[in-house]
Length: 275
Image 1 (cartoon, rainbow, N blue to C red):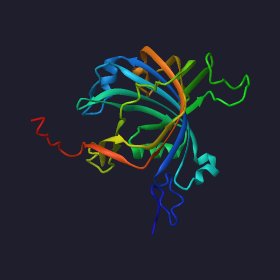
Image 2: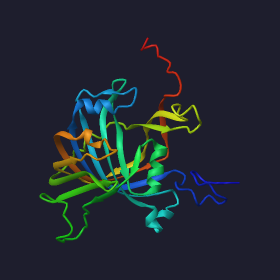
Image 3: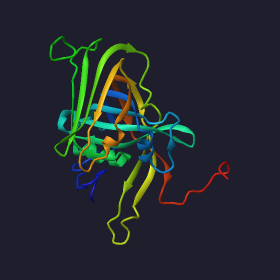
Image 4: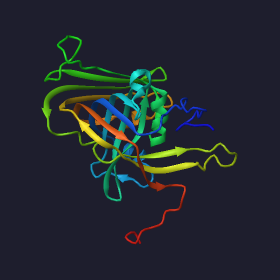
């Protein structure tokens, strides 16, 4: 019998690229709030989502992650637990409820790529780097204090796609708001069968679920963000027209669930309130 949560399934199940949930995450976040062209934001919304009343509202996130499954075995083999990520979320409404969705995301490890597809994130491979903090005084280690500067970069296909930076100003009780509403994504898996290329095997709107959420102290400051054009990429269409605040913090949570909000492959039944 072949075993394993994901491919490749094998006699012992140890070869699976993605281990079975729960998945435990902790990461250092650089969150840059901004506004893009409202028409560009509306163009990337999945079916069923409407534009947010604050048009063009977005956030760009750089994250330096460490993760593991329930056994924690990945922590003793760090190549299986550590990765970095860059993504953009845009704000929208689902039946009047504020939500976010992620149209573009890059990650630098294959297991995180495949795990993201399971969750509905449209992940691609890229090269992401971030300024690190260390808890000792050093010219090479920016302090968590006013005036310190943290930056992140994204490149893919040998081209730089994003640069972001944050200059810390103060510690705050306020968490970022542009990426705060519930996150909805589209799980999409196409068919190869002739004549059915436009009929995906899976095409559904899903809501991310997490538990055991914990957050460190939060620093805020002035943000910088540039998104660059490149062949076969459309990220630059969401370039900022106005910048908001930036935030730096550490965040941890666990994932072992996902809610299907809408199955696009099935006709939608209107509720009494909609008729």
